Image (cartoon, rainbow, N blue to C red; front, side, top):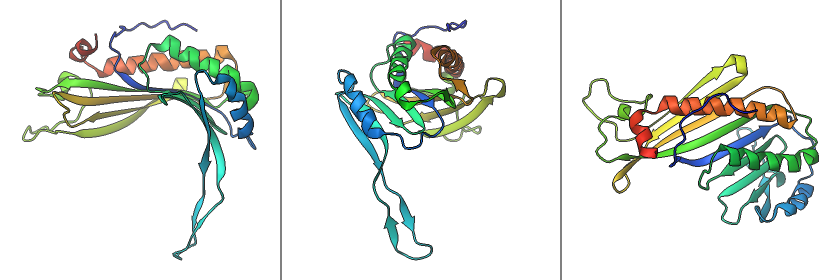
Amino acid sequence: MASNLSYEYFDNAPIIISMIQFRYDKIEDLNFEQIIKDSKKLSNNFPNRKPQITRDIQIQGLETSIKVGDAETSGVLLSSSNEKKNLTINDKKFTLESREKYTGWDSFIKEAMELWDFFKEKLEVTKLSGISVRTINRFNLPMDLKSINDYFTSYIQSDTGTHKFSTFQFKYTSFDKDNSMLWNIGQALEKPISDKVPYFFDIDVLMNKEIPNTNEDILNGFTKIRDKKNYLFNDGITEKTKQLIR
């Protein structure tokens, strides 16, 4: 499904981390060894493969003794040779994360869908319980930054003007009930590095509803999520910020 909405394309996309996730009801007795074996066919892109191990820790009531449970495989982690791209598969989620240079939505969703197509029959998933897309953006603001509202439409500042925040973090959540979507927005102003002031803009959009496990239905859902993500990004920055990434 193609989007009917269009937004400006930025040559210097500020995305430093991109994530896409498929969620499903818990798969009982998922064969992680078989997943690792099957994933060898993806060695060109994901040569590193390893199980994720967890241990339960139990505190015995009010006593000081602690009991550590047996090690259990809780998932599989596939990584690229430089470890900047990771695919995590467990009994509830299938997550692709990339820290490589973002080359655009089309290539990102294409890779995610190809990986899902490769594993979905092995996972025996007939429907999804939800999907999501998350992007973490980094902007390098000028050292002579005077007011954060010159660059972002949501911000924290002192109303009295008696002091200036040198660093801050905040997060908020909103939702669209009609489309079964919610989104978490996080922003953070960090300490200056060299002659720039790092500012992080984290957008996480989730669709929480049952989706048939067909490419058409999944892509329709991701298109709606992408449209919302793009709207939130463009609504959250000012023209002055856009000039930094053109």
